[in-house]
Amino acid sequence: LAYLHWKSHWKQSEHCLVQWPTSPSNVPSKSLSTHPEIKRGVLPNGLRYVVLHNAMPPGRFEAHIELHVGSIDEEPHEQGIAHMMEHVCFLGSRKRERLIGTGSRSNALTDFQHTIY
Image (cartoon, rainbow, N blue to C red; front, side):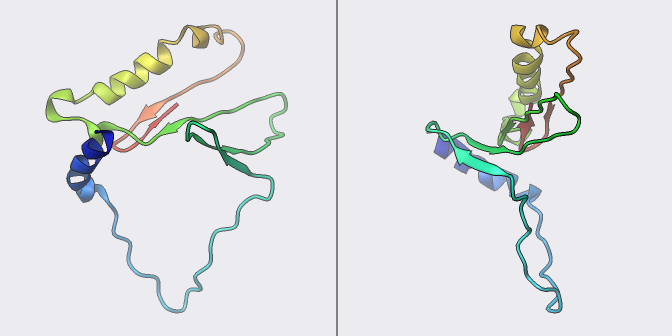
């Protein structure tokens, strides 16, 4: 059912896709290099992750969660729900409230195709 829902929205979102021009023939086609210390994996539930140690600033941890869902998935009568859910899920967390006063910073965003915490 979720696949059918996604597939029905694909045609609607095609106008958002970027059509990049072909590369000039004199530009070599090479893959971007990756950092040698990046660790990638997939959890049993399908969640993909990327981990990279960051020494600066010391004593800090940073995490990002990116969901490939956004306002493009809303029906006209649901406009704003993706952004509201970002606030409910992120700002409404009691665990997040415990971080207040610890020097931590947090942010989230919703665009057409992503929700990032």
